[in-house]
Length: 110
Length: 112
Image (tube, rainbow over all chains, first blue to last red; front, side):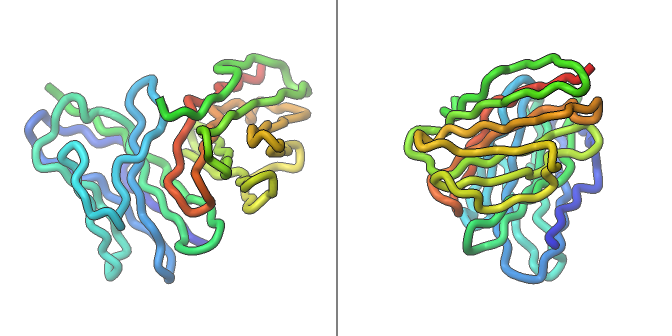
């Protein structure tokens, strides 16, 4: 069965510092990877998907199949980045459920 | 606003009771997904419907049931409630079964 691991429940960084939210997955096939974000008192929303290869709000994520990782990175953290971040995996093809990691709370200290 | 509507926003009930959570997907979306978010378990997938048919199911207790109606709204029924059922229940919808999911604001269930 597929699994998504986010090893850090809480990550605190200072404003302007680089951010890396870790995500590792276990699945031997070709998954689709996503990052969702939940700001305080707001609903969960899609931040990035690996097939888009885009940068949203300064965040990027590269799928590393060799290391089965999909870490989320931003070179300079901003206070408004403080939120819960969830890494998610969906098997490609068919009607497949999305498996979420437990989430990492990013706290950007002013 | 993602367009996914969940009602009610908050629900407080007692053990042993039954509740119904409702979800209206975005206009045009055929798939509806239900998730449970608790402090220690994170966000767990429960069940997915596509155009009225159940497509995938996991982590869903026998006390829980769901359905998607012809107008595509969905209901999640939780019965014989236990303290451990207290959680945030999210609904999400997508155009098909393969697309990006858009989440509702959730229903916070408190079982006392």
